[in-house]
Length: 454
Image 1 (cartoon, rainbow, N blue to C red):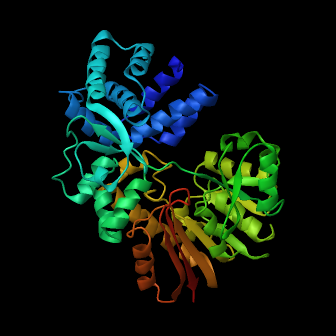
Image 2: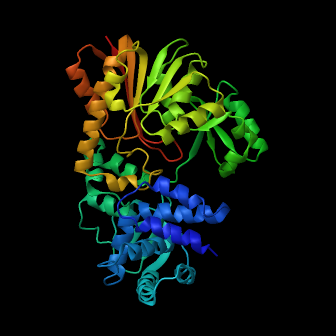
Image 3: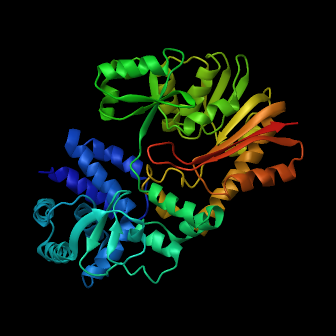
């Protein structure tokens, strides 16, 4: 039986159609429960937001006026319960029991019960996933291995163009899928759609000032946590069995590791920090990359880690303190005005700009991010990134490095930005550029480029 307070909090989050940060709201959700109950409701909330478009298409087909004219709260309730029916294989009786538990009015409860009954009648069975699941109106992909078969064609995708089919099936905005098709081709775009709904693995980075990946893996094994080395990433471990216990281990409390995705761990070596160098991390919170730079320099560089909000600076300071790092100085700072704020100081040997972005490389982690993507938001993001790059560049000494990184895989945010900057500044040399696409069980998507200032 799921606790009523957790169900109601989940419903509050799903009822917010204005797109507030799901991560922030889930932190509040975490304070209302613990253990398996909390993990289950958290997964439902993420899943309902992630699959919002698909759920809407299914419910709109199986029941008349299922969604039309309904309040945000009723929409959220339908999404929460329909997600569980479609993707968690929960029975109608289980769903109706939780519907009763949240205490809706008789009118609302009757409507939701009618829609759930129609959905239950439409579901036939779970079958093995094949490519046919992306082309037929009676099949819904649930994962990379499983699909759901309906009693009749209900999805209405067979006559749609391929990008729209994928957008409906994998619950993504049409413009985003179209951008992927244009930039990467149809086959890769389809893989990116699947990746957007994959489960997100947990990677950690062994703090090289205290231990190494092999020793950390052995220590975590003592706490019944399976940790696997990652080829090509010397400090990385992937946590599998028992992974949710890592914060309760002595290894965590002693600061021997930090949670950081595999792709994020590839950025620090591009900066290539050395002892004695002066390094600026302009958008540093929560401090994963800044602490990595400190470790790679043996904690002997001079690292200035900046962010705009005090609560984000505290996260950097907390991670720095737990890891025992002494070479990082935090400053509250608006990166847009970097050229002015640091004008009186010595130039930096290297600057890392991990810029704000659309987060399209981390959609499996940031369930709400997909719903912020549109032409208008991309224009704003592109403008902000360009402003930050031009604020950072004057602060790099001649011969120094500027590393630009993103957790986006969009061309207009990555390589296009770098090309525009280089056209304005012919003294820049592109030394390295890499686009990482998300992989099942592997790293997130992202982009990074290292520019040498001539």
